Length: 193
Length: 379
Image 1 (tube, rainbow over the protein chains, first blue to last red):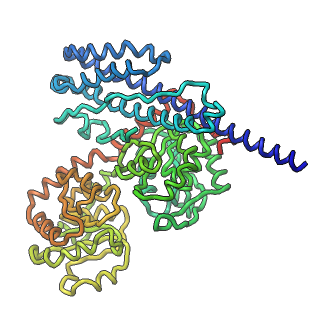
Image 2 (image 1 turned 135 degrees about the horizontal axis):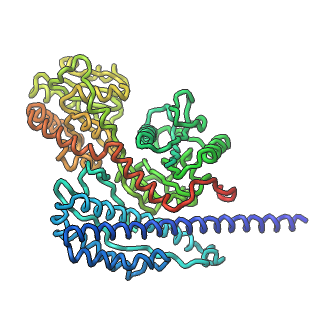
Image 3 (image 1 turned 90 degrees about the horizontal axis):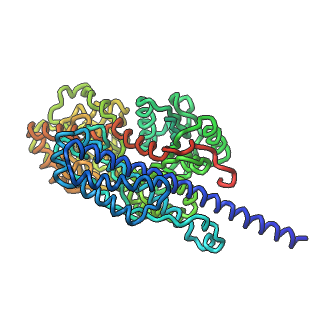
C-alpha cells in the first residue's frame, strides 16, 4: 500500500513538473513569436521611412537598398525565416542609411530624416527584444530534461537575428541623438549575446 | 494605454525606486494613459489616488542595509485581485529580482510584462545564487530596462541576459523655477552639498577638508549642507574659525532640495564610491547650478566627460579646493556650465524618458493579448 502511494506521488510530481516546463516552453514560444512579429514590423517601418526620404531627396542608392528590403517583407510577414539572406539585405540598408550623403541631403527634409533615424532606433530595440526572447527559449530547450523528453521539439529552434544596426551619427542640431526632438536622448539597446 | 506598475518598496519610506515609480506614473497619467500602481505601504492614507495598497512590508537585512520586502498569501491575493480588476494592456514591474510586489506580480501574471532593474551590484552572490529560481519569472519579461549602465552590467553578468538602457528621469520644471532659501538671495560664493552627512561614501569630509584652502582663496565662501545625519557631531569636528561658514540645515523636503540648488553658485558632489547613476547631478543641472563632482565612472558619464560639469580626482581635497575657487571666481565659466547642463538635462526630462518607455510598451503590446492571470500551475 505504502509503495503504491509513494509511486503515485512520484508520478504525480513528475507529471506536474513536466506540465510546468511545457507551460514555460509554450509561453516562451508566444514571446518569441510576438517579438519576431514586432521585429518584422519595425524592419518594414524603417524601409518605408527610408523610401520616403530617398524619394524626397533623390537618393538613388538608398532607394535601391530600401526597395530591396521591402521586397522581402511580405514573405517575412507570411512566416518566412529570418535567415542570412534577410540579414544581408537589412545590413545593406543599414549601410546605405549611414552614408554621409544621406545625412547631408536629409538636412533639406529634417522630418523625413528624423523619421528614418527613429525607425532605425526602433529596429535596434526590436532586434534586442527578439534576441532576448530567443536566448531564453534556447536556454530552456537546451536543458537535458527537455531534450530527453522532447518537450520542445514541436517547433524548430529559433535563431538569433544578427544585423549591424548601429545608429547613424548625424551630428548637428538635427542629429538622431540630440535631445528636444521629441525622441529619446539616449535609449541604448545594449548587451552582447 | 492601461498600465499597471508594481513597486517593490514601501511607498511612504524615502527611496529612489519609489520616486521613480511615482514620477513615471504621474508623467504617464499626464500623457493620457490610465495607470494603477500597487505597492507596499505603512500608512495607506499616504497613497495617491492612482495607487493600491499591497500590505505592509517586513524589514529584512540585505546587501549591507535593511530592505523591506513583501511576500505572502495576503499580498498575493491583493496582487491577483489588482490584476483581475484592472485588465492592463501592459504590466510594468520594478526590481523583479527583489522578493516583493514586483516579483509577485511577475509570477502571477501572463502577457506583455516589462521589467525595470534599478540595482547596480557588481558582486551580488545572492543574485547569482537565485538566478535559477528567478529564471521562470524573469523569462516572462518581454522587455528589460536598466536605469543605469551599472545596473545593465549587473543584469548581463548575473542573469546572463541583456537590457535596454533608459535612464532615470528628472522633473526639470520642478527644479528650474525654485527660489533661493532665505538669506541666500542672491547666492554669493556659496557651495552646496546634498546627502547623508555621516555617510563616508557621500564625501562630506572631502569637501570639509577642502574648506580651509578654499576659504583662503575665496574669502567670502560659504557651504550650504543639506541632508540627514548628526548635525552636532559634524559641527564639533569643524575648526572654530570655519564654523560660521558652514550652514548645516539637516534633511530637506523634495521642494526645498530645489531651493538648496537655487541658493548656491556651485553644487559639489564629492562622493567617494558606490554611485551607480548620479540623479542629483542632473537635478542640479535642471536647477541651473553648475556641478563640481568627483571623477567616478557614473558621474563622468552623466557630466559628458566634464563638458557639462567639472570633475576632480576622487578624495583629493586640494584639487577640489582649487577647482571650486576657479569656478567661484569665473562668472562666465559658471554661466557656460549652467547652459550646457540645462541642454543636457532636457534629454532626461520625464516626458522625454516616458516617450522611450511608452515606445517599449507599444512594442511589447503590438498584436498581443492584454495582461491576464497566469494559470495555477505557473505560480
